Length: 182
Image 1 (spheres, helix red, strand yellow):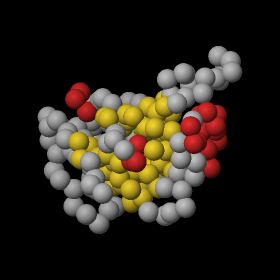
Image 2: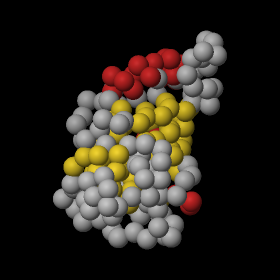
Image 3: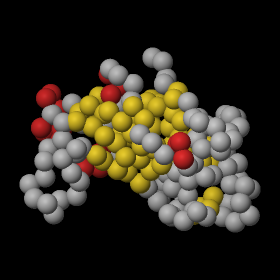
């Protein structure tokens, strides 16, 4: 990630492709009835220069990306640092062959480039997803826990300027949950 000083409406995508998703969740899919996992909550994380975050899914066998949940505006800290409940029903299903993306829109008002990192002068675009059922690891050396949490962070994702004009956000705003209707 490298966002130039003064850049507006820069779109960064952290993507978990279907092959990596299947490998990461192989035992969970095998343990799930019908091979279907249920997504419950997501924590979408970025820092102060992020203005809008969207968790999207591309269903197996399609090339259409569907927004599951959007935080717009995203305030970068405080009230924005929480888990968001995913809408009930078919949108919560996660199947083999699906891919997930976290789409982060940034405005860099800083006088220096923003790079990926944990510092106040750096940015992130990542998510933690809570799902069930979760297969318990065979031993404690395996990554994860028995609650069914999967994280995806991508330092090498691509940035692009979207065609749409974003809403102007104030860092004191509390984000509203935007659930696509379908």
